[in-house]
Length: 275
Image 1 (tube, rainbow, N blue to C red):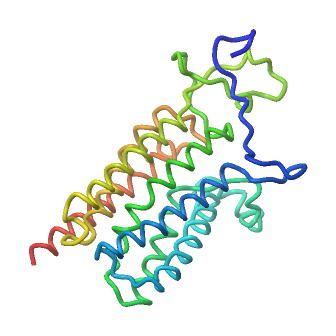
Image 2: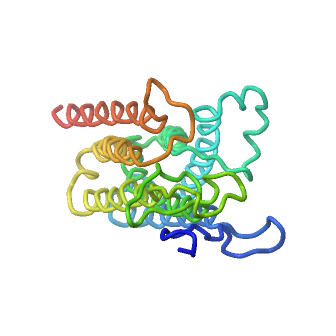
Image 3: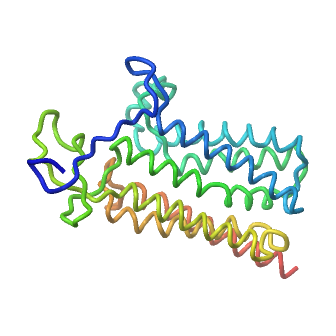
């Protein structure tokens, strides 16, 4: 808050540590590092519990593949799904990661490709790897959305709820805070739904039920369906960051395909169980 408005004015520094002009450790990058460390730790837990089909040496190779898949898929997905025109005009901008731009749907595609490679490379059941990836992903989503909030990007629609936030970057530079419309902090809504809620659900399914041991693929399919549902809900509060597709925000439109894929995977897993 300040003297011009009763709403909190976003003024968070995107850098945890500054090394110089434009250089430092950003919270967004730190979110990825912590997410990958969590995934590697969870790999070990699954192996020790007899759930993972991978050996310890194999985990390192698969983890590296997942990291590359998430980063490459997230970046390429953003360019193809949200910035296609610029990608066609200047395709080299896909490498300009310092300008930002990552898409969760593209990241999903990237880690799925990495999972398929791992299953083929080590001759293990892909659905088991997919289930482990489903249990690992929400933590990274949660941290990523929190980092989006810290960066003051991907803000929500205009709102006048008590917890609304004024994002200076949502208005032309130099606009007084009192003249900027407050908005939903939709990044935090997504952190709670896509991240924390799905993290609690997948961990409960992984450790308190037999789904990962006896029903390969079910958890992965459930995750995709639930992610699509909560993403569509959160999109109602989020300002579209690209042109609409068939009257839907792109996050909603792409989530429909995730939901369909998730349902198909669950059905496949149930049929496999019945055999």
